[in-house]
Length: 204
Image (cartoon, rainbow, N blue to C red; front, side):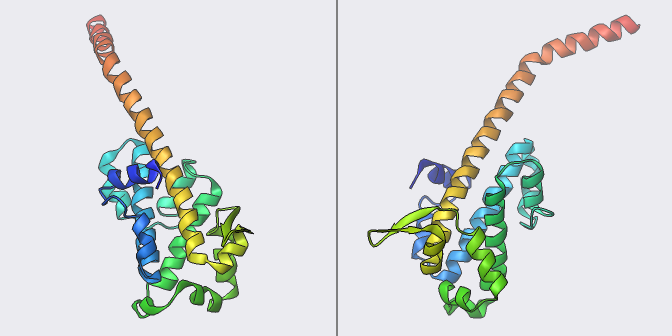
C-alpha cells in the first residue's frame, strides 16, 4: 500500500491497514466503510484548505452531498479535486445510500445488485466509479469499463485508492501552505505592531 494511504490513515486516526482490509469485508460493509473513509478524508481536505481547524466538526457533520451542496460543493468551489474524482465520490455516496442504507441488503453482493439495478444507476456507476484505464485479469489485459462489469468491487477499490492518494497529496499541500503563511505572519507581526503604534502616535 502506498505511503499516501498509510499517511492518510494515520492522519485520520485509523488503524494502519484500514483501507487494505476493506478487501476482506462483505460487500455491504465494504461500501459503508469506504464511503465513511471518504467522508472523513473530504472533511479534512476542506478544513486544511481553509486553514480553519475549528470547522472540522462542522464539516464532519455535513452531508457529503454533490457538487452543488454539502462538502462536495466546497471541494468544487475551492477547486480541490478534478471533476472526475468529485463524480467518483458523489456516485459512491449515492451507491452507499441505495445499496447499503437498507440493512436487509447485508447479504447481497454488489455485482448482483448492480446487475438488477435501474439502467440509469448501472450507467452512472459504470461511468463514474471506474477511474482506471486498464488492468490485468488472469494475465489478460482488460479495459477499465469491461473490468468494472466483471469485478465492480475490485474496480471501485482500485479507483478509490487513486482518489484517496490524490486527496492526501492535496491535504499535505494545504498543510504546507498554511504553515508557511502562519510562519510568515508570525515573523512579520512585530513589524505590523510597530507600524500600528507609529500610526497611533502620529495621530496623537
